[in-house]
Length: 76
Image (cartoon, rainbow, N blue to C red; front, top):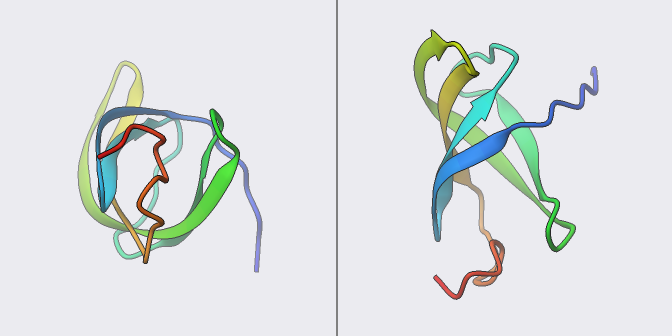
């Protein structure tokens, strides 16, 4: 299996996922590792929605798999 690191940013976050913008295209149902750079927590996730490619990159809906309650550090 191949490991590729891609930094992106979130537009919307929730307790069980996020809307993220990435510079690389990903297929639906791709399993990824999401790392919150603010608190260095990592959590597995899956791509559940794919938007269109815009000037800033691709929009994806990401579902976190069994996330800790404080994954985003925002008290959601």
